[in-house]
Image (cartoon, rainbow, N blue to C red; front, side, top):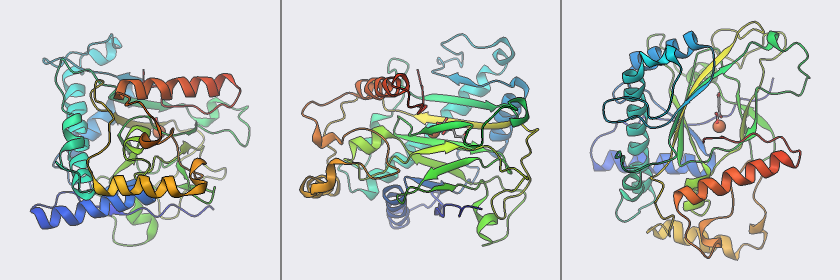
Length: 343
Ligand SMILES: O=C(O)CCC(=O)C(=O)O
Ligand SMILES: [Fe+2]
């Protein structure tokens, strides 16, 4: 069985400037090293009930779906399936709550990177009806492996890709890990849903939902000149024989569909991705320029060139478009690297 990724679990509910600074540092360190981190799900920003209800909705629906913006009265601004229409207000509230969690994380990144002002990233993600953005709430339904009996051994449920936005929140159900990240050594490491149970550390609390998995997307990696990593990941089929990651509760069988809920957070479309006012980001990019091997991205790192390597300041929208273009070109050239396809 491959070794599970060992990612830190960070409690971001700490109050007071000293605690906040410590948490911010831990978050930046994890994002710089792994590009993925768990945050403890205290149920404050996003209630456990809200998450359960969201999974109940995708379970009823049995199909994947992307939700873009909702208007001020909680109505979707796109056409949505009739079975979802009744749930629009709940969906809008869930999307809003996810966005607030992301803004809280973005503020902590600003603090951890000593950006001046610290709400530099969070402000770029302020929402308003007149401020369109690439943010998407995605409900994912993966049919049971038994429904595709001619699957090959090396097939995966979702191909290797990196996410396009600034930060992504991922919600999964216990026993349905599936997600794997590409480590710098080039190996795929499974990411457990319940990391405390998997590592054997600490008692798993049946009442508490698992932590929320957070990862850095290409845009935030680009904006920070690669200091924060956008890590390549994929979704694998359950192992034959029903093996799960050590300690993970529940077994995933070939007869089970898999559900996940993802929130891709993006800044407002017109945000200029200009130099981040942070000495740490600046000195990171000059170190990189001096690094002769700097041209080739390390294994596991997704995305395009760093912001400091481009002459022109891109907007968030232009950055997303360039990532989408690159993904489609890759697909047409035969390398089936599925991207986030967030439009
Ligand atoms: O379903 C998952 O666990 C991950 C999905 C994902 O990586 C994506 O949609 O970008
Ligand atoms: Fe992803």
